[in-house]
Length: 74
Image (cartoon, rainbow, N blue to C red; front, side, top):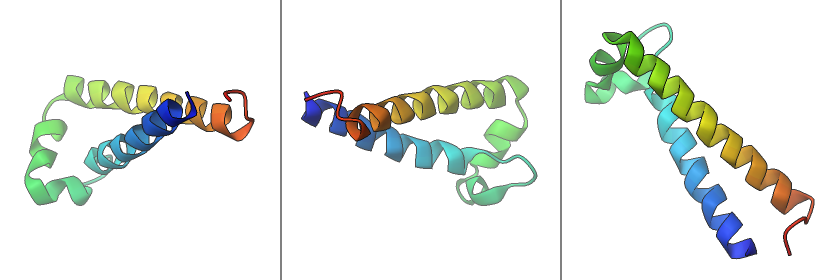
């Protein structure tokens, strides 16, 4: 079970990195390198969806961190 939680945590960490780099709150940011800035800056609903997905993945990451840190799962 611990291996499963570690796997989820690693996957969620990688997804968080990608999702945070795709955000462009005040400019193109790093998302402008691949042309993704026009995809998300032109559509408000896509930005809201990206925020929701980032929040959910962050919550999964924090939950896994607490489960592993406090030794709840053995």
